[in-house]
Image (cartoon, rainbow, N blue to C red; front, side, top):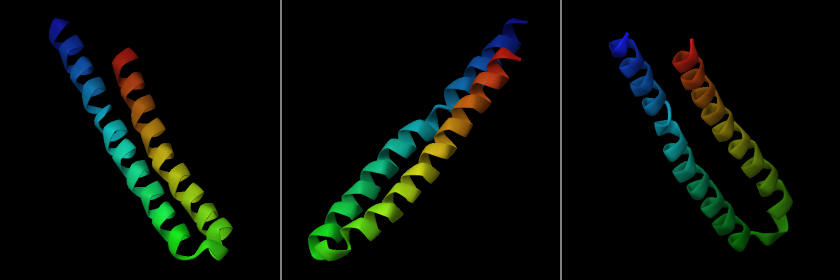
Length: 75
């Protein structure tokens, strides 16, 4: 039983890795947005819409990973 708990804890810890990768990805995404807007300020709204879609996609994978880890840990 202790081995199963240890494996579940390890899986939960490994599911937290995408959260750190997503933080890096969001930083790169918005840095690219700032560079793009500074080069072409007239298209700021269009670029921002694409940036928000990318942000939503990244965060979706973070939440999926987190919920997968929680489900594995508690079931």
